[in-house]
Length: 174
Image (tube, rainbow, N blue to C red):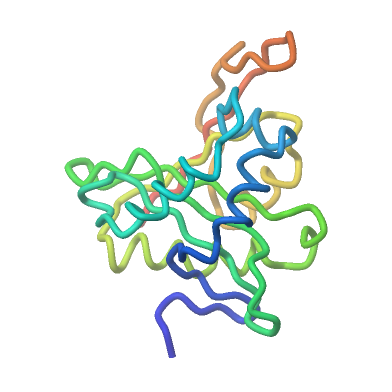
């Protein structure tokens, strides 16, 4: 059994075959407000990204994994560790499930796999998530794993002509 298998999903490394999935995901403007993206990505740039995706998390300070449904072997989303800081034993976490796969338990299953990986394998002390207040699904998801809201950044994100606040949620490995 692989270490990153859940009940419904497996978390796996990026593969060259993920190019089209990445291309449609990264260029979906509905996701741009949470990914801080302003311009589309070309297939050339994403191919280069895939070629460098083998970098160790300690080198790249980030890790992107594909969330793949075990039953169908289809990519249903992505989960990222970002701002990885081994000195302070912390990382940010972000998750994206494509719309047609939402509300199917994939995000819950992915977090149930990645959180123990962060604490036991990467030896982290804390994980944080940045969530906009109107993303009630993400707030419920992270709160269900005992992430606590520890702060609010006012007018933090500018998207579609308006400023939005951003909450910070944190989970400390007790």
